[in-house]
Length: 229
Image 1 (tube, rainbow, N blue to C red):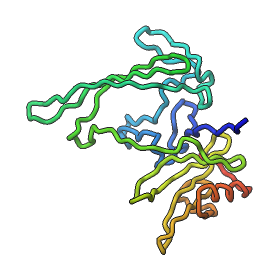
Image 2 (cartoon, one colour):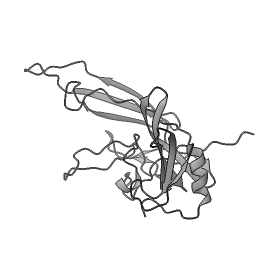
Image 3 (tube, helix red, strand yellow):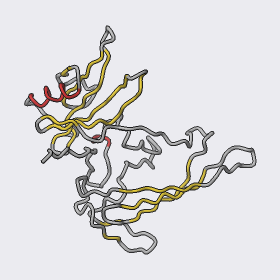
Image 4 (cartoon, helix red, strand yellow):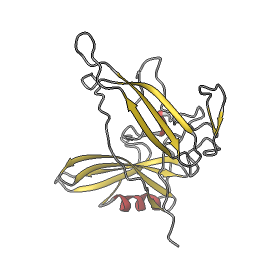
């Protein structure tokens, strides 16, 4: 029987059911940026449909029970959504500028059948924040070395077949370190990694020719501190 691959690692949720700043690297493309930064209306990113196996009241005014995610945490029982979106065509204001488009996004969990609908407006394509949604990709299966898992959280194309990659290192579902591809003074590519937060310069940085090699070095060390401790 083939060995089971580890599942994607996601930033843990805090007591309020949100992804806190201390739990997610700023480079993580899977975590949406907050809206209204540095203002009173700032809200932390929250997963859709993770409420201890219940969804908040919808149009019916009743809590909707779900079979997925009974504990309200990430894991193998989390929802797996199919998503369908519809939006308006171009609409123009009196000054001929594009207006925001209304949209409806319907998500259906293929595991438990729960249906979640989101409605709102999309920014116009010619606005300060373009309405064209960004598309990116990360490797879904994390690297593994001992008790450590390294989840790819960002990949930026440099040129040709060269990419800048960033990983968050997890242990028991909690972020404990980071890894990132680097370029040396002579142009040679390598991967660096350490426990703790990126850029805090308080931990010994391990280097290697690949992310797997660096992760093995980190797994062999004894000092492992959670990022949000």
